[in-house]
Amino acid sequence: MRFAFRQVDVFTEQPLLGNPLAVVHDAGELDATTMQSFANWSNLSETTFLLRPTHPEADYRVRIFTPDRELPFAGHPTLGSCHAWLQAGGVPRTDVVVQECDAGLVRIRRDAGRLAFAAPPLLRSGPVASDVRGRIVRGLGIQADAILHAQWIDNGPGWVAVMLATRAEVLALEPDYPALSGLELGVVAPWDREIDGPDAAFEVRAFVPSMQREDPVTGSLNAGLAQWLIGAGLAPSRYVARQGTALGRRGVIHVERDGETTWVGGATVTCVAGSVTL
Image 1 (tube, rainbow, N blue to C red):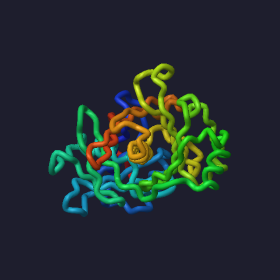
Image 2 (cartoon, one colour):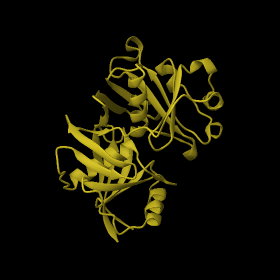
Image 3 (tube, helix red, strand yellow):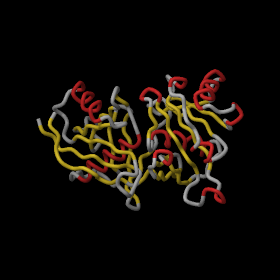
């Protein structure tokens, strides 16, 4: 069967500098085995499949797959799927797009040429035990006192995060993925305006040991980071983060806390449009 297909680049205005996502439209006839097989074949960090919603308030439903498992929620697939759905002619019921996924309903707003999703509640938060911190220290090859703060910020993928002192420290990391096995790790540090410039407030990297890789630009991680950092007074209620620098990407993530809602957004562009046979 042939399905409409798009490959989009998320968290960038310029193609090839963000995080790519494969999107299969009108995928209701596909079973989970085929979806997983295609996600494995595409070999991107995530592949999504757009379906008719089952919840009366949702505009569409999405299933999100990595090459080896299905996720209840992920950030850049949320923005990329919404972009593809709108570009294919999708019309939301209200001024906010409502996406249905295994984590529930996710609101997405359109603002200043960007899409932004409302960060879902954390499934796990709180301090990181000393043994886990020790694994992170060994896996990153750093001194224990290099970690200024550490927190669980799991909103589906399983993120744990640490803060280092400088952007240079974050960019210098060369992780030992086997040592980090079983963790999905985010690392963040503030920019120094005099050294790093005024374009962002934080540098972010995402290490995924289960896939032995670094994720270029990660919406779910940045959502969890925002909820942690803003809530703890480590970040202002509105800021810009950069991610992907170490991989030659230029991901730009816009974060804003509005009342009780944390919005995480960025630009999205289509790089490939056509059809796929599955």
